[in-house]
Image 1 (cartoon, rainbow, N blue to C red):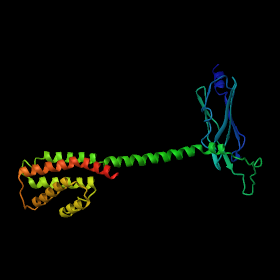
Image 2 (cartoon, rainbow, N blue to C red):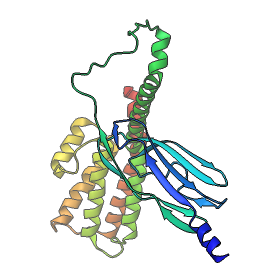
Image 3 (cartoon, rainbow, N blue to C red):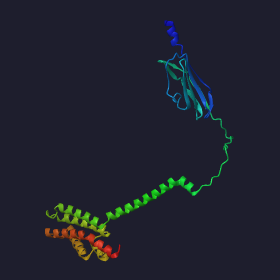
Image 4 (cartoon, rainbow, N blue to C red):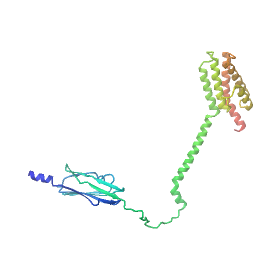
Length: 291
């Protein structure tokens, strides 16, 4: 009885065959694995279409099983020249591992420079209509139109943003906030007249530069007053305020005068009032001139 079981275990015969060891590029080869004397045992191997290595492009992978025989046929092709190896492949036969013999496959390019490549049939001229061109290129046309629209919207949005940022009201509100920040520093109450006038003049110069497009940030006081008078950009009432405050600021800066708290309060309030009225003055001038 023990001898019979031993013979049964060893009765399975694993074999393999390769129909060609030399293939042309893209030529189909066949690799077959068979197991005879199976005695209805289970066979486990690589999943379908994954039996052969990477370079072997599997075309079909079929398995046929009967109680006595297992057969797996794989057709494949290789699309690169060279020598490739099919290694010894493992098959699990009811828990026992058996391996096939390895193979070497040479893949060659059989085409030559002299070979003529001819069409199967003659070329046919097809007359295209407008609708045909539309079907061919409609997505390119739509994409181009969408790009133009996006560019136009971007330019309009940028111009609108610039216009908003440079609007008289926005500039006025920004400067009023800067003046409020100056007031909170209590330079007037502490008698720090020099720091007070330095910051007040800087805020005023920057405001005139942005609001009236006069280079007040680079002009000397006398030159700035002359430009304001020549251009008539600022109404006479505010022009007088700018002149008095700027001249006094220069005097304080060079220690030629020491203003009182009352004078500093007045100068601050006059500049603040000038800033508040500027937006209305500019808008009125734009309506008058049609700008």
